[in-house]
Image 1 (cartoon, one colour):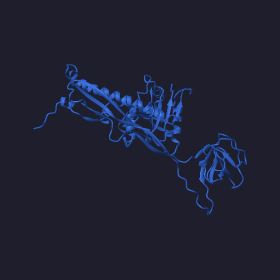
Image 2 (spheres, rainbow, N blue to C red):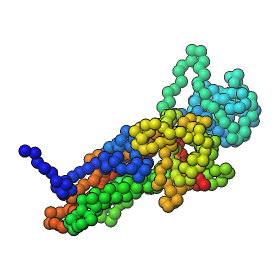
Image 3 (spheres, rainbow, N blue to C red):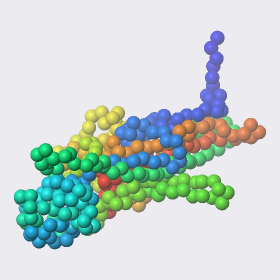
Image 4 (cartoon, rainbow, N blue to C red):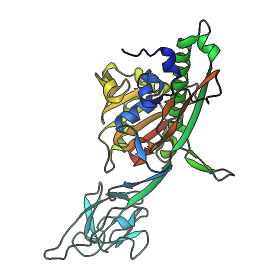
Length: 389
């Protein structure tokens, strides 16, 4: 004979429900950034410590900038990245149809901040004068016949670190609320859903705004905060307040372009737009913005494609970037393979029902608890755009 489980027994049971399972059943607009970063990042990755670290690996410098004028026949050039030059590499003068060779094992050895060079004929110095601000291209090594192979150089890896933070939130439901006419089971379900939406919105705002840190309390215990997008992208932010004409298709393409030129870049970008950017894009020609069939399945939220001169860009409107939250002028360009949510192993975000102690017979307490953080690698491949009017 089968056992009948009543709704009341289910509600009273001590259940542990993964928060992602609940979030996926809610309206995706409640937490757009959360849904997208989980979708493109392959879920939430486990880390072993509250402070987690990783290494960013970048390609060696290919284009550099002259920092001081250099006359024709000069044998040194002041440059921004002297140590990026190695012996016998070709140096091209962008726009001048001329070149020279590196004439020291590593740039900056003879003179700090300068690279020693020889003329393109193999002797002498520069054949074209250079001005501060000119762009140099560091080309391949030009090997002499029978010459020994050049020294090996490895690309520098940069270590980065951020924090996972722990959160707790509870909701208490009394036995009167659960049994009073007009409330009961539907009210409990509504209360739980509202609390879930509230937690997702708070977390989504933290993904944008939180500043990472560790607070050591007087008792020696630690409290953490995660690093949000604004902190990650502090050095990669464009201010639109002084741009005449506002956000146009051309302007947007030019804002995205710099995120595509770096090594190891993701071919796929995603744009998160706020209230003002959404209004500007909605006013663009109909041919610029097209619905993407099946986007909800791939991205977890409704995504359109914006057609620019620099590619087709998936675009999602995040209602949390609103005037009410002081974020109406925000927009983010994200490199999808270089952003991921993380959690401390063994402490995922969960919803626990009826955690109250056994002596409290009149109240049922539910808890929303877990750990979460955000890892964003190679920030130069992302961009924050602010003050969109």
